Image (cartoon, rainbow, N blue to C red; front, side):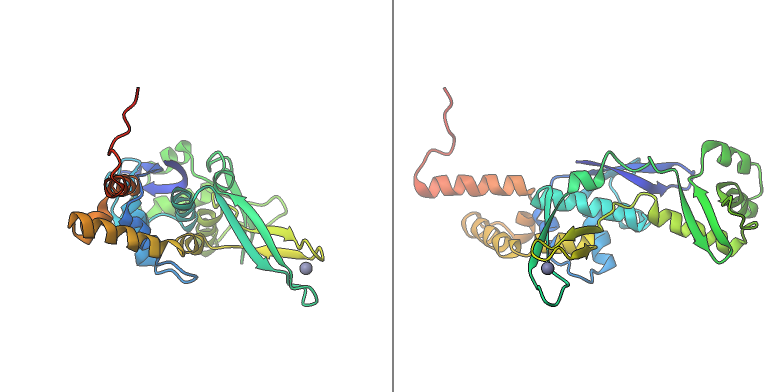
Length: 277
Ligand SMILES: [Zn+2]
């Protein structure tokens, strides 16, 4: 599965890498994904994402340092794609109604494909409020880079910031360096983030429910019921084939299931292969 990232990763030569490819899900990935709860371990997320990515632009394989350099919103896109690969496109969110007199359980259904949309990049700028006022920040273009390329190393960043951060017409003055840095940090987080926040109505009392799920948490929840099943599948293959746990977990989920199917046929005394006509 290919996922278009927003900011992606920029290498030392200045090339931006934005297209990520997820490989087939293995038992190792499923095992790691099951470890995530409401407070995921960032290092664990790096390992998980580096493990499932077979390519990120020109990076193949993808090291954890590359994954760690992605913005939070790009990581959210990858986590959602992985969740879809593990548990399907549909995400069901269930929340109690906030009205204390009601308490009804409301359900909201989201689609990963819809959340990821046609890919980021349609939004070219974002308005950012800083201590120096409101600024519009747009993504750097080739012309900006060409303009600053002739400057000494230490001056390029600030020169680039001055080009891409424009004061709002409502009248803020020129931005300070601190405000520029804050504006750029916000740009990285906001432009391409999949919007997971949903507002729904309670089916009973029509009160508003606001949900803002965390992608890592969604991934962990999708695997909640699967940890026991994965363990049982590893057990069956280890018991009958005598393979090591690490080797079984390294199989893609598809191949692991095909071996289990063969085993089932063998134990049932059925032919291993359906003979076509
Ligand atoms: Zn209600």
